[in-house]
Image (cartoon, rainbow, N blue to C red; front, side, top):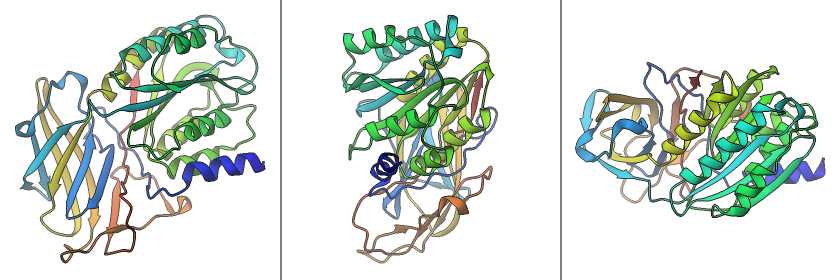
Length: 341
């Protein structure tokens, strides 16, 4: 247990990030992947438009604060380095077609990552196995994935903590965990609470892919995704895994940072409207902002204890007055839930 506690502490150390509830995406406005107010009253949000939106420029994006247009800039993040950890369930229930489809989808996912990316691969059955350490995609990673065998129990929670620890260094890269599982945890030393508390103190993106099976624990996977403001994706069968992994890879290559200076403090509905090649998308969140600061002052975020958070359809971000904090910080809000069946 001491080792587990050290792992959780290492993941959360020095983080000034709060995870909030995700909002529905299908047919509804999306949320922001990140909100960075370290240069308040300038705010920077990160969005992930649909992969078929085409390349966006500043003229394609409109920012509204309480319905009033705000001048904005748009910066593609496709050239920013990515660090990703693939977590693949190798328990006995994955035997046969599921593990074969999972391995091929993971190999294709690695091949689709942008140049300059780093990836690690972890399998988990009774224990967590590091198949490939965090490094540039290589034949070693591909061979490691191909060698995975389905057997044993499901140490799901231990695997998520191991993945978070692998990405715990102070890196400027965009960092993500992509988890695939067909069942609930049966073998971990860690608990679900350990995982959600640890993830809520990180700046990690998270994709939880649920493969339909007889041992599902959808509530646990959804809670893990919510803790990191990630996505929960359901696949009806193993044949759908390739499309899901391909869409995630496309998402990671199509994120944009939208920067703007707020018009006023206080409770504000911020809406980013994207006019892409295939139509219009909206990304919405409500921000609780301080008064506009005097020259030279800086904002601070109030960290809400996990127990005090509630799931709400409209994420609220609280940014408060001047502070002694000197480090850059960012707030994460919900990306939304998605189902591919």
